[in-house]
Length: 637
Image (cartoon, rainbow, N blue to C red; front, side, top):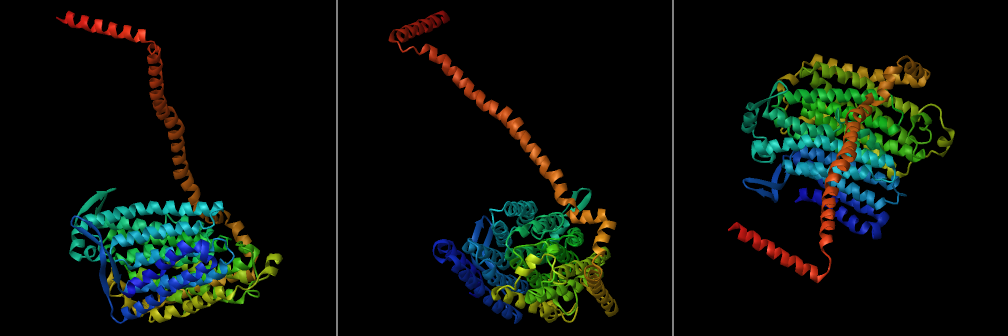
């Protein structure tokens, strides 16, 4: 079965590298992992072609869990959504594997890094290929585990170790809601299979059961989908659990490209899209999803405006773009959400890998204030990064334009005007801060002569993936998105992703054209303002920061989320823990334990007095005892 082969490629790489990597394969472990992911890529492309020709598969490989009347299989689901996700996961993973040949060449943990990459790839494939919620859950948790391993790969660095723990803990918070959602799924539908849970009659029954929560009458379906969405809030770094993603940049740059740009963080978007029959009928949850996505998009963009760490700017850009996807899914534009996930995977992976190429050339420097003029030293990196900037800014005909324009149009037509307005403002800010990176890193004069003199273009193992990703960032949007709002992606995904508000997503040609022109104008304006600030009048940023210092500080300090969480959650927990440790544990628990020991010791000391070791004393005591017992017996009569 071809579909099992997609899983077996990375699985074989994991087994081989885990047993033979450290002692025997060493640097050659990378080739084993690359071979495994290439097998998955080839089979995924073949699967996509077959699905485009009408192929569909929903099969049970074997019965996995048998509990009473509940049967949960290890099953494979191949449909249009699976096919798209397989291409994203395997292609980006392949590019990252090849890129890592050069980037991680001298790292002593070479074999371990590629083993972790294979674990992550397998985890994502399990998540995508499963035909039930349990397989989704297993892939979901394995992705979290592999993310922890990869973020903390350089565990000797405190910052990397802390970032991996932060990512793991924050995701557990979201996953708690996800667990509740899964429990409600199995209680409501008596099954975890997608085919049973997406039954329209069962969904209607769940919709009719309501509970008052905080004064709002919520249906069982709303509660269930909100629980599932909490998992997406954590995994896809949505407000208010977005704080882990920027810190995850402490991992190696290929990890940033693979996990935190193109694949892992999109797991939440995929889950919402996969569960679209549930979310489409959950009106309250859908509204929450829209506004969480809009707030996240705005929050990420405002923070990205002020950062000077190369990778953190890209990280907050990822937060913002994930907000776009979630906003579209909440508005019922599931195809637009997956389309943006698809295009974003290529240009964001490109941008992150370009940042790694710059780090490679600049002795791991990330402060963009020390860069400048690198286009002369690194033309391939520079021009491919420019393509990524144009794509994410939403300039036609590059990939980001088609999917971002569609999200804005669908959100507007679904009558979420406030969310559309936020999305439009974010489009301007995205173009500004991405081209701010381009001007500061690749144009102008070098700001650190020493670093500039040692800069050089990366080896071909790193530049070839950049070129391939750049080509896809140029063409993939037009191939799948033309004509706007009615491209091939709609006919392809239409059978599995039905719009939640089908009537609302039809606009007049004039309105659609007007919104498209507005989005292009906003993106172009963002590019022009960034050029004005950082090329024509480089004194303007300093003047603006001085004039808007409180606002700038607010954005630069990331809206003080870390400080607020530290003050409201972490420090109270630390205080409670210290009280339980020093106050309760030392004074109560230890007192009880020590008291029991003191009683036993005191009793032993008393009994020791009568243990003289003399036979005469023991005989006298026995006789005396017998006399006393007989006296008591006769006195009783």
